Image (cartoon, rainbow over all chains, first blue to last red; front, side, top):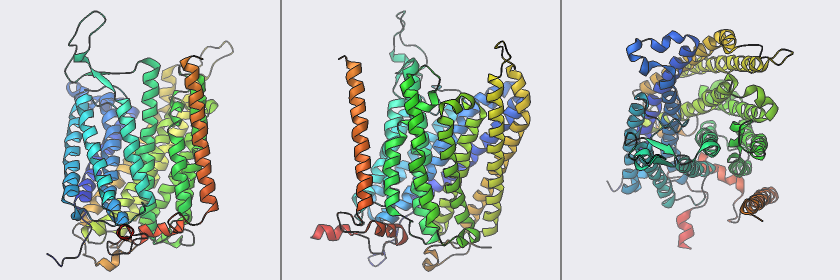
Length: 497
Length: 67
């Protein structure tokens, strides 16, 4: 025992790898069902009218968004943290019994939270705030899980050997702090059972129901400050943390400019929190706030592109690796999709563009080129890189990975192109009017026109889900693939044919 | 001056300070090559590249404490 060399302990990273894959399948499967429900409404009642409550679009939609955000993405963030954190801080979780206990507690409580969310959303229990649908008992459980995550982060930092914190660690810390602040403020709510109505009634509603502490426009403002920054601190910041570690490591190249990574980090932190107002353009919030939301959204291009370009330039002189390795392909295309959606977002936040884009499918397209092309690709790439290191085996199949890459890329392209066309068509039709100012089209006219694009979107989603199942299979088979030596794990991941 | 005006001025001043701090930091990064510990900023990339538990840290914490 005494002479056993110290090793990184990936127990908790592996646990969260499992939930990343399982919840990814659930979230994406529900997404594909929803896409086809929009294209072919009869699917809403596919299991008969008795079960329609559980199969209709409105009941399943929060399950899709929350499964991919709080299931797939969060698990990916946790899993990569428990892997990257140890390595860049040069300290093993095996060195601290407390941290190991906290890590496992983090996982099991998270799993309880996930179960509560799935059951309550399927049962239709919701606060009806987008991306914050959970009722107060679940909110409290999530806060506990998050606090444990924070203790794990700062605990590991506390016993580190490396004095400086690698750029990814800064991004993970920002994820922790950002979401903690957003989640707490947006979910300020009062259980209805504690309230008294204007008429003097008390003890209203079920024990788990609550109402937001904010009202009207203020509620909308807080909600979109939260909603947009959930994108910032869930879909951007931690994913940048991943690419800053995994791309240099897999390619064996130092970051093109470490200084640029620091600059982009603080730029992103400074700008992102103000941009949420762009979700409320042409609404009842003060005009200056809408303008501020637009302006900050546009300036956000700078730090976003700072990170993305830094990653692409990291591959400078090494582009043959992109051709040779499907794993690097995922990361380079992910970075490219990041550039693409961080250009598209600011364009949509310009008031005159937003007049056409708002409430249309273009917004849905924008979200998905970001999450499918950037978040999904990067998390899968991270897990692919981790697999040989945590299982001490080569990745089962390189060709399967390459096929997956192309199938999913086609899926993403079909998704966002169909939604661009659908969204702009919708926006133009809604505002078209005749010479007297009468609207030229009724709502059903737009529905008829959009049908083929909705069907294409469904096919795009199905391709992406197919690729994800290939990923899951590849990861499963990796667990029993050819064992590898430590020396094979220095940079490029070993892969079987 | 009522509270709303006071808030508005405070808000503006806060943004101005944050902008100055950010630009100050950018200027600082632009003009110096090494940080206060004497490490070239670009050396920190090695934290990811040489991340085995037996690799030498870029700047070791325990050595720092022993001094």
